[in-house]
Length: 147
Image (cartoon, rainbow, N blue to C red; front, side, top):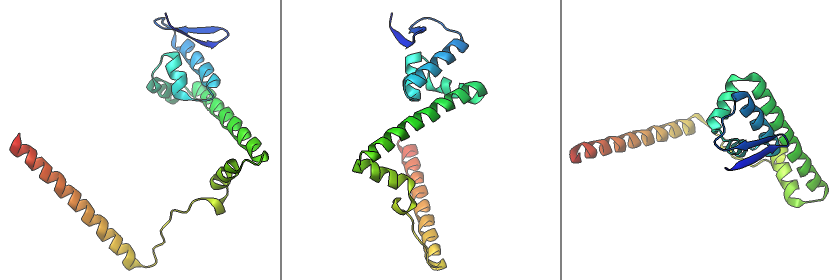
């Protein structure tokens, strides 16, 4: 029988039925041990990620504890990043600046200078939508004819 060590006090055994409260406790412990990686914690606890998200939605205490673990994870990652920055790691410095400083964020904007340019864009989008719709209708007709 395969098992996963959850914590000093829990070993999750495959094929053993646990109460929902026990499963939630194990998932939270695994979530903490696995640095907030939800999928890993769920797999090791033997639950579907859908179950995890259902618990988050319906159980406010569980959701709060899971959120606290995520906050701890983020704080840890940020502390590692800051340590790397103080060690003058160029990649970490660039990453930090791109994520946090507005002057270094990648620009992906298009400025529309006049209403004619906006109208041309709308017209182009409308034509593209009509073309896609026509192609879809043509495919449906071909399917009916060959079906």
